[in-house]
Image (tube, rainbow, N blue to C red):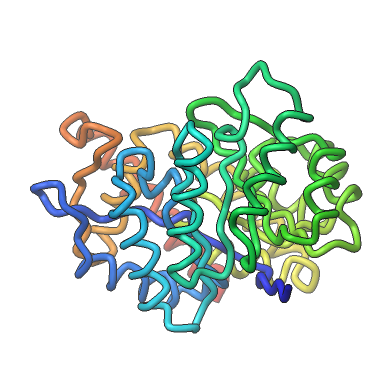
Length: 305
């Protein structure tokens, strides 16, 4: 099975909604073009940032199809939408997503076993799932909701040894854990993409393949430069790392509403409507935080020219 997941930046895509709560495909089309114009290397559709736990299966499938079609091979697309707690429901979800033509279908690590179940049980279910969804590369997302299940290096190696896995979105936020995971999968087709901004440069130096996190909805171009040129521009890389690490604190403030506000200020027709958060609770101070972050971003961009 050919597995070709480009290194670099993979934004965790937000889902634009109309003010009445339907998926806004006209806005989504422009959002996809914006990501691509920013230089990203791939798109992670139908993930937690996309509010996948609040989307119907038909909506998740439709989103994956739309993003794949609109990207039209200019960048790779992977998708999850794997939210069911029942095995047969998971099989249906993954098969339907695979049929959309995405480059990889992403398993959500906490959907495969309860928090108190063992890694052995987890891996048995992985083997059952990949047997039911053949002929497509797989990924793994250590999604923090409803609980975070981090993979041990040993468990990750077992996944890599199947030859089916190409992508890990790592959410450990721990350089030592990342180093151990990278060592465990060395020489395999499984690549690690860090979701944590503060540890990004350190992880790239260890051999991580790139970034896949929520902050690529704010300033993906900076992540592109950091992931592409960290070794050839060490001083600029340190400057970028200092900015993206500190800027990522805004993730704690009403995400993804604040990301949608930022995108709207960038001129995209993205409303603040969310299904996972009450946009009505997005206050003036939250708007100021986004606007001030963007002002600092623009100052940094002028220094980088």
